[in-house]
Length: 313
Ligand SMILES: [Mn+2]
Image (tube, rainbow, N blue to C red; front, side, top):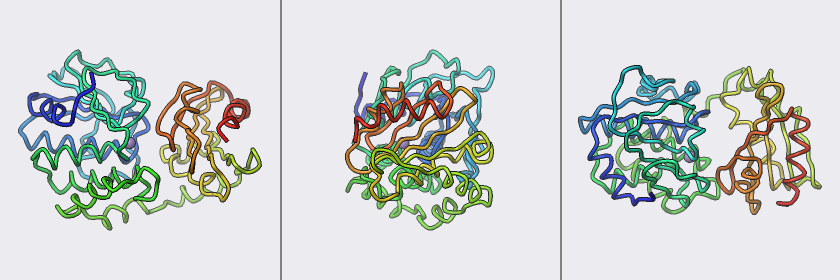
C-alpha cells in the first residue's frame, strides 16, 4: 500500500526494534540513507540493525556508523519492523529470509515493485536521501552531524553532485537545509573524490574498451573479469566513461559476472528512457540511469542489448 511522508514518519515512531535493509552493490544514496535512518531511530531510543548483503565500498567508510552495517541478519535477533531503503525490488535485498513483521519501503525508483506492506515512493526525487531529509526535517526528528553528512552524501552521489537532470529545486533545498544544520560538503567530496592507483589502472582498462554504435549515439565500454576483480565494487564510477562522450545519448557499461552472466549499467543524456530499456531485460531503475543482468557472455549480451537499445535512439 502506498503511503504518505507523514504515514511513513508514523511507522518509524510507532515501532521499536528495526531491521534496516539496503540493496546489493550499495551506492552512496543507499549507504547514506541507512546510516542516517539508523542514527535517527537510535536517537529516539529504538534498537537498529543495519544489513546490506554486499560489503560497503571503501570510499564510503569515512562515515563511522558504516562499521555497524552487517552483511547478514544476526542470528536470534527479533524485530518488530523491517525498513528497506532505496530498494526497488526484493531481489536486490540479498535473498535473506526476512522476518515476518510489518515492512516499509522508502524509495525513489519509478520501477519499485511494491513488495512491502507499506511503500513511501517519490519517483520525482533524485535520491532516497532527499526523501529522508525532508521527512526528518519537516517531521521534527533530531538529526546528528553524521546523519546530516550521510544524507548530503546520498543526495550528492545520486544527483552527480547536482549535475544530473534529476536535480530539482527541492534537491538543492534539501542539500541547503542539511548544510545549514552542519553537513560539510568539502569534507564529503574530499573523501569521495580520492581515486586509488588501482582505480586509475581500471579506468585505463575500461577506456581501452570504449567503442560506439548507432552512428555514435550509443557508447559502450566493458569491465572484464580482471577489471571486476580489481575494482568491481566501484563499477558505477566507470559508466561515466561512455556517457560523457559528445553525441552519446545512451552510455552502457558491460560488467562480467561469471562466464555466462553480464551485468549492465545504462545511462542516458537527454531523451532515452533507459528504465524501460532495462526492464526489457528484467531490470529497472530510473529514466536516465538503470541496470539489468543478461544471462549471456559479454559479446552476446552486447549484441542482444544493441538490438533493443537502437529502438530508443
Ligand atoms: Mn538512490
